Image (cartoon, rainbow, N blue to C red; front, side):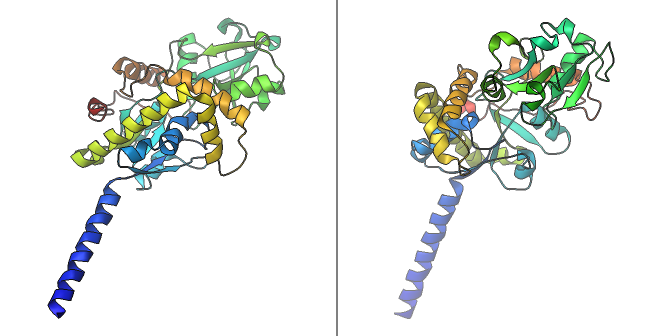
Length: 331
């Protein structure tokens, strides 16, 4: 009887362990680049509509913020996969955090330089002598590449531009502290319009149109993780469900915006703002299958290599092994 009980107990423990391992093997922790907002609608939609569950995945979505660097989170074991811009991913790789791009949901880029016409900016010829607001923390590289392409110094003076290290708001443009500021199509540009300026009063430059575009929100994992075929399979399921979420968001922007608002634990997001953001982000994911376009990748690399940053270059050499199609080939 005793042996029977012990055997039954051992069997139950083994079964429980197997179940725990199965649950663990199918868990995915996603670390976002920024706070909960329409920028990440596809992931929240995939979770809310059961697309991850259909793939047998248990996905945790961790919001980011100004004090959270996704590259550090995943390097420390706090996430399986992260969203980040390619500039940050490649810079981290060169500095010893071996990140690999496994998918690229954002086909287009949303980074803009938004300028006031009443401060004398209508073309790039008007930049000299002006103060331009620039985001840092890895977002400055396309700006410095652009200024290098234009032959403009970033040290100020009549023949160069004055760089204002811009916070993540639009105040410098509204208060005329800068002639131009950094904005995203789906976020700060809308804030500028809501502050009272009209499109007719603005000159807007899209970095991609200027030949210095960079790939933005992609999905990245640690290189060692890709040595495990089970992990690759799990990421394929994750990407497939995520892309299904993005497709659903494009077809149902109002529902997607409401899902984002429902997931905002701060209570600061409004339906109006998130609908605008989802609609604009949908333009950036349009046409993406999830697979990285190698021509877009190379443009990003070329932009980064040409960026003359006074603080810290993003990369100093052509990256190797920075992306893989192993995940998206299985979609």
